Length: 167
Image (cartoon, rainbow, N blue to C red; front, side, top):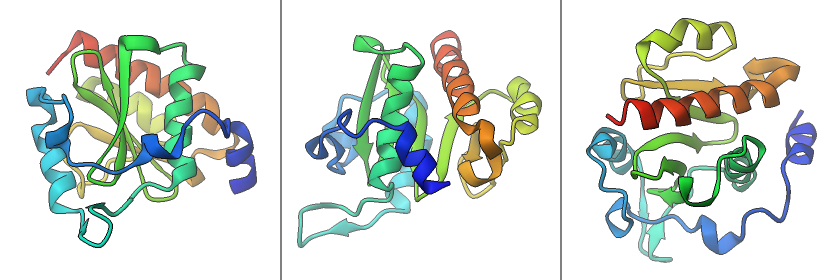
């Protein structure tokens, strides 16, 4: 499955310099709706003084996959901003609200309101109380063969909801 995942994502879409983990304070992502998720990231990250940055907590190919969702869904340009914050790859809307992020080897997270959860659960999402409220986990290995379509679908919904509900 990992080969299938890697094969679906373009290799040249993300440059390694774009994946350098940084502190959220250095970015223009000051939207109030980010406070809780950035606080969670900060508490669960490690600063590596030897290299002067936070340890990467999102596999590079998973970060590339998250970035590829921007292209695959037709959302791009100045509509979104992709960054690596506290070691995790994030995507924020044009207002600076984070609506998607990836971590580890297999985990995508989308900000979704309560009225979307039942439909997301039917598509394989899960609620993990380890993470702040409002975020659903789409664990690739649980999504089955339809994982690309599922991720694209929920990425678009999360993006649109982030604009409509700009919390």
